[in-house]
Image 1 (cartoon, rainbow, N blue to C red):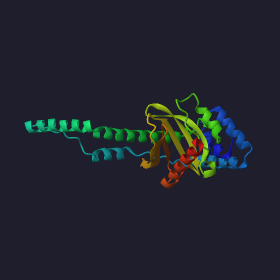
Image 2 (cartoon, helix red, strand yellow; image 1 turned 90 degrees about the vertical axis):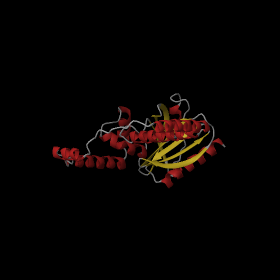
Image 3 (spheres, helix red, strand yellow; image 1 turned 45 degrees about the vertical axis):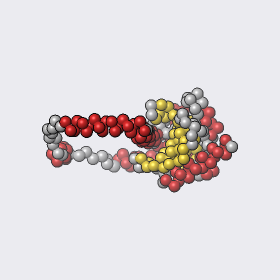
Image 4 (cartoon, helix red, strand yellow; image 1 turned 30 degrees about the vertical axis):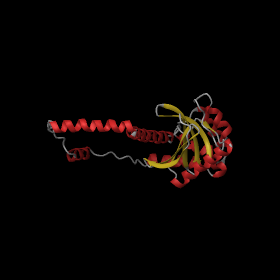
Length: 257
């Protein structure tokens, strides 16, 4: 185990959230590494200081009563009966929507809504992974260890590229769930920032150029190529996440070329 791999798991070790195998690996590494042993000691001191500080604050019941009193009270609304003209207008609008559906415009709206939902699920999966003990199922900086681990667990194993020399350290991978199906997540780190690269199979082999959006405070770089959808999610700045994606795609092109 390297220092990069151990550092990711130190907090989980302190909180007792590692399984026996990972805990043993981290403790073995710490026994022979002064740097990681010192980091573990610092983390334990910080945890103890926070626990001893009694920083919890419980709001008084009076505050709840004041907030509830300030909220607007629901009022019954009288719904007027629709006029004959309004009913006819509704039928006309329904016909217009049917016409739009025939041209495919409604389908585009539905696809956009679906993409927004999936992006929201991807961010939720990223947040879950940041909880102690949830980030990595297979810990390794070796792409030849991480990629075979996915074999047999998914219909298509995600490509795993070692970008350590380019400044993005491969630290492992795991199985996750997005859009009610299992997908692969390849995990990288840039300084103290985690990058989750989610990979899922798609029916289309058409290449879709990368697009970066911000969802719930996290940046997502999404692209598609050769039957796979990619979502790189991180709190990295957009330019650094774009750099990660560009280098990953360049490496993929070199490997397949």
